Every structure is written in structure tokens, then in C-alpha cells.
Amino acid sequence: MENVNEKQAFGHPLPDFTLRDLAGSEVNLASALRGKKGAVVVIWSSTCSHCVRYDGYFNKFSENHPDLAFIALASRHGETAESVKKAAKERGIQFPIALDPGGTVAAQWYTNQTPRAFLVDKEARLLYRGAVCNFKYAEDPEYVPYLEPAIADLLAERPVARTETASFGCAIQSVYYILPRSL
Image 1 (tube, rainbow, N blue to C red):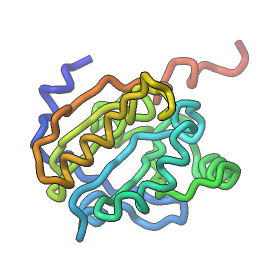
Image 2 (tube, helix red, strand yellow; image 1 turned 180 degrees about the vertical axis):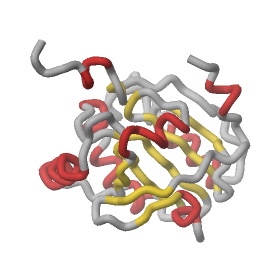
Image 3 (spheres, rainbow, N blue to C red; image 1 turned 60 degrees about the vertical axis):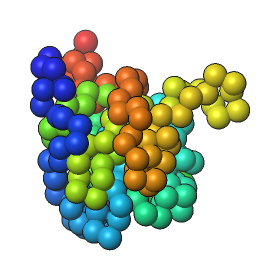
Image 4 (cartoon, rainbow, N blue to C red; image 1 turned 120 degrees about the horizontal axis):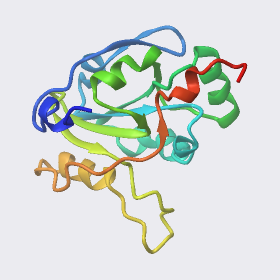
């Protein structure tokens, strides 16, 4: 795998995308950023157990951060509009989800697993990428948020102190997803 840092530099714009949301409307980063101070884009999956953990956080994101846009990109191999809609209904998901068939944007943004968060400023310049937190619950004494301090830095117009963390989660594409069923 190529070195991500050679292809995706902090302080430089991430490539825009045009995808469809669950209602079939066009979604793109440039439009989402209009009138906002920045955006969080999460490479996400409706079937990833790690993503499920953040449903409540993502559902309240726009309420907690009205100056930021938020988009989850359903990028996992084999995910369909129907399967994502079903999961959204069952789990009470209210946050915006765009369908990234085949993980095209995820690949363009050098992402191999879900969830992976990206914080960009109003010019789509990359400020933070990685995990939302250290995968502990907020009440755990070892809990460390990663995305929230980066957001606080952006909103306070300070340089983001911690620009990157390792992300963890479910593979976007794996050989197991494409093996023939008759094994």
C-alpha cells in the first residue's frame, strides 16, 4: 500500500465527490460546506459493529455542531441502498448518509476501514483524519476523544493540535466479501 501521507496532505483540499443520499438526492462536499466553517465526513458502514457504537453521537452531531456539515459515506463492499435504509430505520439513524457504491470515495481518500473520520475546513482542506475516539465509552477513565478536540481547535480558529490518529474497525473490502458462496 502506498504511503497515505504522500497523497493526502494536511492543509490541502480533499477531492470533492458527488454521491446520492438515501432519498436519491445529490450530495457533494462543496455544497455541504456552503455557509459552514467546515465539515466532518465519516467513511462508514451500516453493518460495521464499530460504526453502530457511534449512532447516538452522529445523530446529535448537527445539533451539537451547527457550524459544521456532517456526512456519513456508506462505503462497504456489498452495501446497498436497501440494506442501509433498513439499518437506518431499525437503529433510528437520523444523520445524513450518502451511498459510496464500491467504496470509490473511500479509496480516493485512502481509507480501508470503517469508521474513519475526516475534518475539513470551509475550503475542504484536511485538518484531521482518523478515529472518533480511542473506542472507550465516555464514562471510562481511559476514554480519549480525538475528533472533538480537533473540532474545538477548528471552531476556535487554532491549528489542530492532533491531526491524525490510527483508525480501527471493519474492512471496506475483503476477500471474504467476494468469495463464492459455495465453499
